[in-house]
Length: 357
Image (cartoon, rainbow, N blue to C red; front, top):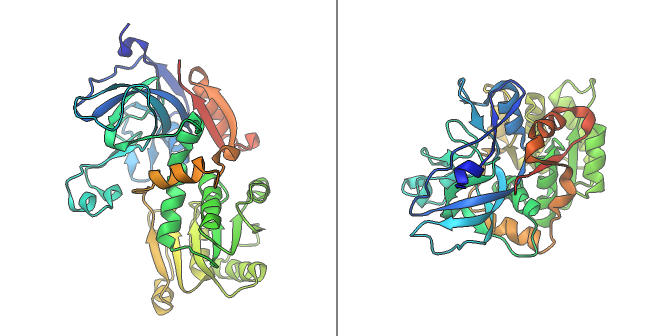
C-alpha cells in the first residue's frame, strides 16, 4: 500500500467541521523528507480557519484546506540532497519554508520572506495528517528524551522565544503580559528563564490566571472586569498591582484592542510594547506618547532561528511545556478535538492530537 493510500487528513472549510479525507502525498523533492506525523497541537489560528475560514489577512476563499502546523514526526524517506537526516529520525517541524535566497532570508529574518510557505496558511496545506512532505532544512532532530508532544510544542514555544528576544527581556526586568492563553503562558516561562524579576499577567478569565500562577508563569495577576474600560485607567491599576512606574516590556498576547492600548500606557519610558496577538487591522494608539517617551512598538510575526533554543530549553528541563497540554485526542476524533478547543467550558489550554498509526 502506498503512502497516499494510507494517508488521512483533517480538512477544514470554515464551517466549524472537520472532514477526514484520504489525501495524496506528493513525491519528495531533492531537499525534502517524507514524515510520518506523530503529534499535532491545535492553535488559535487553526480554530479561526475551522470556524470562519479566515485568520487575519489570510482566507480559505472557499477552498478546503488541511489544517495544523504545530507538529512533530518521524522521517520515513529522504531526498537525494538531504544529509542531516535519515529514516527513523524523530523531528520537530518548523512549519514555515522560506525561499532562502532573498535579502530577508540571507539576513536571518526569513520569517518575513515574501515567498514564505507556511503550513495551514492558504493556499498551503497543513500537517494534521498521517504523512506529510516538508523541506529538510526546517526539520529539527529532537533527542531521544523528548516526547513527540514536546516536539510539537516547540512551535508555540518558538513564538514566545521570538517575542521575548525582540522585547529585549533580561535580568531584573518587569514584564506585563496581556492574555493567559498558551502563548501568554509560554512568554511568561521564557521571560522568567531570561531573568525577568517580576511578571504581571492580565486576563478576563480567572481560571487562566489561576493556571498561570500554578505553572509559575507569572508572579502577579490582574483580572480585567467590565469596569476596566479605559486603557489609561487600567494601566494605572496595573501600576498599583506591580508597585512600579511602568514595565520594561508589555506583551500583548490576547488580540484585544483594549489590551494593546493599555500596553502603551503601562510601559515605562524606553520600554517595549510587543504586538503578539492579532486584533483589529486598524487600532488607534497614542503614538505621539510612544515617540515622546521612546517606547518601542514592535510587531511579532511567527519566529526565526528559534528551534535550536527551544529544543535546548525543553530537553534541559528549563521549561516544561507538557504542563500546558490539557486534552488529548486521536486523529479520527479531530472534530471532537476542535469542538473542545472552541468551548470555554472545557477550560482547554493546549489540545494535542495523536496522528501516528
